[in-house]
Amino acid sequence: GAEDTCSAGAGDGNCNAIADEDGWIAVEGSADGENLVDAEGASDTLHAITAADEGWHVAWLDRTPAIRFASTDGKVPVIPSEVYRPAGDAVVGDISIVGPAAEPYLVWSETGPSGSRIMTRAALAATAETHVVFSSTGVAQQMGDVVARVPDPVPVDRSAGVFFKMAALDSGESGNFEIFYIPVSDLAAPLDPLSVTPIRVTSAGEYSGHPDAFGIAQGWILVWEDEREGIRGIYATLLDFHGEAPSSPPEAEEISSSPADCQDPHVACLASAATCAVSWTDERYGRFAIFSTLLALPAGLEGIERGPEIGMTDSGTSAWYPALATDEARSQFFLAYTISRGANQSDTLLNFVGQELEEAL
Image 1 (spheres, rainbow, N blue to C red):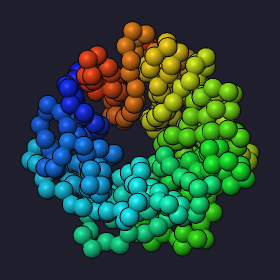
Image 2: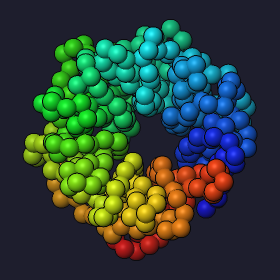
Image 3: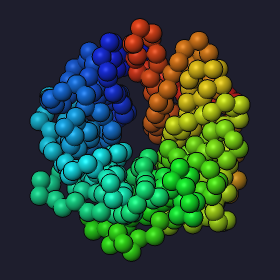
């Protein structure tokens, strides 16, 4: 129930948090707290943090720009390693850390004048090769919003799922993005990127983006933002690890019922309860607010049961960037989000996903 786990003050902080058996750790890009990683510059942007065997794996993009990675015990600052530096005018997008804690891999997107590609590299090996998982060419196939996740239970091998938005090949317009999926059986030796055919998950005919996924017993639960009804709403679907579903494209369940735009959904699940929490940024108050709901999972791939939507922040405060984590031992969800304090100040807060949601189900 702690507040202000990452207080940015007047700075420009980026923050994320994760739970372990004993409590919480927050890693800050530029803020008032203790620096866990020695990095130059205040413009570094934190992208991912995951648990390691004895501490935490952290990945970020520095302002040079290069992808940096470090493993830390959360107490002693460490010197990060440079994992990858884009060439020429190429721009690195989203970064994920996936795979076993003892052998983490980084997955990221890169966009340049000639197209986009998704790349992966072993994070701890200084001499590791960088592999291209998938490559597209031309403006009509620009990609973004890349997230990589591992199946449930967490595998001892190097399999993962990669979700991203890409301009639909049949759209004729570069702005008509849909959600695609690539199953990766081995991050250390991906397939020839030219032979990979991404699986198209959505077919809304309008913009779809910001996917987030969580590994469940059936495969994946996927959430994303979607403009199929004229405003941006939050949708969910279930897939097996191969990207297959009972229908093609998979049936999309609308999660939000807001009359205003909703965006940036995040999902996390409790295997013991067959329950997932979804949180998103919602504009129904005329400003950004955080809303959440719980989803009861079916035994198969059809029939998500949606609970009521609960406002996690009040109508007088702007809040955005929700992030969810779970604690299986306590059967609880945790929610972190950024909230405006006015005068160019913002804090990142950590809350339980409230008792109201549990009672509502």
